[in-house]
Structure formats: C-alpha cells, structure tokens
Image 1 (cartoon, one colour):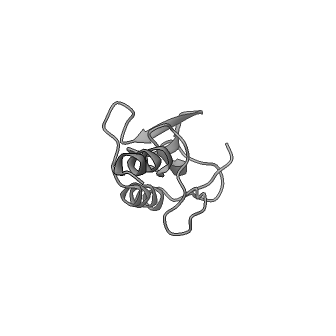
Image 2 (cartoon, helix red, strand yellow):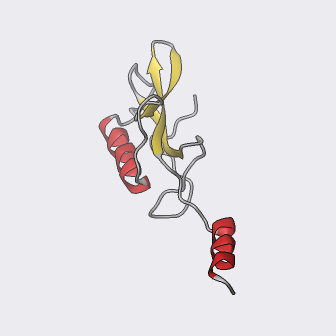
Amino acid sequence: MKIADAIKIIDDNWVTKPKGFRVCMQRREGSEWVTDYSPGEKTAPLDSDVTTWRLAWKLAASTPLREGETQEGDLVNLFVVDQDNNPVDYYSTGEKETFNACSI
C-alpha cells in the first residue's frame, strides 16, 4: 500500500478528539433557571476533558445541594460538553455523569 493511500484511510477513519470542552450547568437567578457555561461561550474552551471534569466537580463541591428548595446561585446539573455542545463521558467511568443532579 502506498503511503498516500494509508494516510487517506487514516484521515477518513481516525477517531478525532473534540477541540474543546466546557462545563454546562444550570444556575438559579431569582425564580428562573439559567443555563450557563464555564468557560463562557465567548471564551476559548478548555483543551482537556479531565481538567474540565475537575472544574465541574470543584464547582459542584463548592455549591452542594441542600435539603429542601434550591437557593439563588445554586449550581445544579453540571456536566461536560464538547465544542458542539454534546455531552462528554466522564473520564474515570466512561459513562454519562451529572454532578448536583436536580430536576427543575
């Protein structure tokens, strides 16, 4: 097989890693729920899914859910998305994960 043919096969079939990652979360503002991202949508995304999952975990741990009704500023439903806003599997389990999961 010629190198050019091999490179074409690889280019056509190689699994590519997403170009960037963000934490997607919902935040309470008064009586409304707002979807937010970190880093923000107008900011460059993070280049590591592991770093982004650690950010999600730290945000969730810093705003734990309390018994009863959520409060303004509470961060819920934190998970990682790629540059196309597709959920990214948690690196340590290979499964979908949501921190501070809350039905709103």
